[in-house]
Amino acid sequence: VQVFLAPEALRGAGAVLVDAEGRRFEDELTTRDRLTAAILGHGFDVCRFLKRWRGDGESAGNAEEGGDEKGCGVSSVRKAAFMVMTEEMVEQFGSAPVSFYAKKGLMTRYDSATTACESNGIPYPVFTSTVTSYLQSSTYPSDAFRKTHFPHAPSLASALSSNSPLWLALVTPAVHYTHGGIRITPAAEVVAADGNVPAKGLFAAGEVSAGVHGRNRLAGNSLLECVVFGRIAGRNAARWALELAKGKV
Image 1 (cartoon, rainbow, N blue to C red):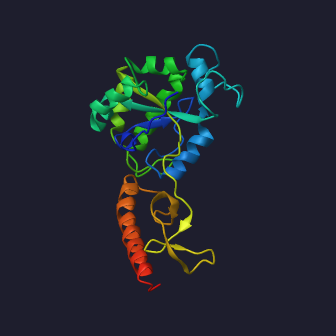
Image 2 (image 1 turned 45 degrees about the vertical axis):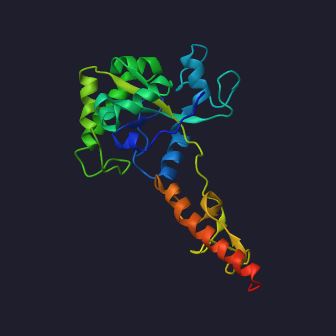
Image 3 (image 1 turned 180 degrees about the vertical axis):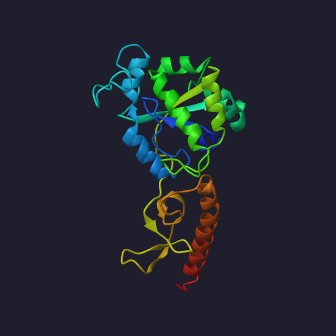
């Protein structure tokens, strides 16, 4: 099974997440830690879903937890959810990258909403109820999950009423950035074990360091962190080395 980074912009363009039964379970635009926890708590077993999809297992919703993972192509039990998009959402995000995902087998375009549900074992009546509720919530300040922004929500209802095409993908939490654990000062100095005094001549930057982003890193900020603290660490390390060579430290 190929795992590929799904940009948050997909959800920003209006994609909704549903469980195996076709129900939403969290604000799609919430912070990364909350959404990860929600998928782990409400998602379905990827391995068992793939076995059902290939015709050698149960549906994602009816499958028991755990079980044999051999032959499904995943190294460990992963929890996943369905990401659903309309043609309007795809256009908003960009049809070119979505076409690339489709060629990689990461997203699938179904000719109709009913086919999309039937092909993935999603109960169509439940999904219809979910979309109806979602559209209603978009007229309120927030929904049950405290979501306040509902991009292209009407297009979902329109897709169901006209049985128009839908795009589906499996999404699962994955580690693609590590917050690290080494405390550093604004000068990129590593803070010693006693908690306050910087270790002399030791600098750190990037994923090995901690505290720069807090609990959630904003998309794109890892590159900014590398540039900013990488330059600071490199400059200060060079200065330290020069002072050490001169016998001044």
